[in-house]
Length: 422
Image (cartoon, rainbow, N blue to C red; front, side, top):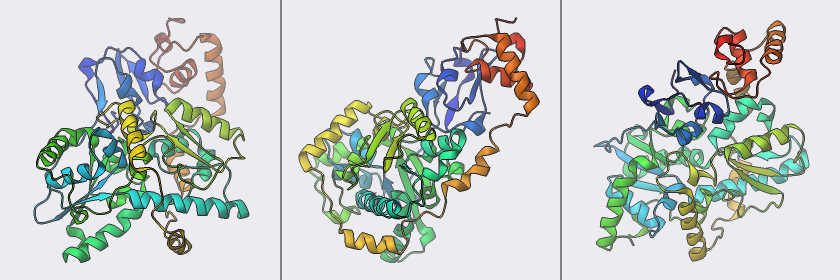
């Protein structure tokens, strides 16, 4: 079954096995020269969509739905969106969204900064209590969280138990706008513009707490053409310097920086922090943490996409061009904090930042997705591996010889599929 995150056109598939080789959770097999999927193992990383040379596998993108008449339409903007438009300021992007018909365009900058404060506070407290294991792992990237749940369940307790910035915003925005407009909360329609596969698919939302507050999600590449057109029209009419009240929360450099690898930890008071981006690099570091390495570190920011979220599968601009745009923002405006630590500390002490969904709660749900192997089956698998004596060529349609042997023992593949035996 094809995962919700992707679209698959079978007639374009040539059975080249490139997608099989890059999948981190061994979701894909080649059967009868066509790709097949174990959708329950898909983490939505998008690696298969990037590498498919024939375009058979592509991003699953929801259609743009018009703003709902008679409702208050509110769009929460991923900071990655600002990096997609060289030559425009974040305020221009928010203005363009207003021209697309949204009543409010919500910038996340304040909530990103609040989250960073909360991380600082949690780490300082945990250094005294040692209730959580070290290093703590960022909860921001949904692909990394699900990858840990499937491949590295022993590390789930390392994930920082704080709500993500979009969840912090979503918790308050309906109440605020409901009071402001004099309408019921159900009449507030929340949209989220995102670079990530994971957040576009609604029935995966149980893993990402902020999606519980979002009604509709849109990929950046889906709205890009119309938004660019509206921004150019506004710029020609000299409307790019709209007053602040036309959009909620004035953007800062901290927002665009967040979309780049290292942006989350930038400005944190901790010294023992590192940022890792790219799927292979992320998996390599997770394996090292499982071995007990990096226990002297406070916090590790992981992003499955190379260079961070600006390299996400639903972006519209080349990630290096987007990175250049962010760096120009930093040169223009610098990086500073606008919020008072005292006020954030008061919210922290009230437990406002703590997540109700603990990563360790995912263990049972995700262990069921991995088929267990009995001792007798394990012996047969080892015997087959010795018989095959292969080099993980993937000609059989599985990513490696061990996975092929497991498929054979489970009755999901035939020994004849291996050219060394056939």
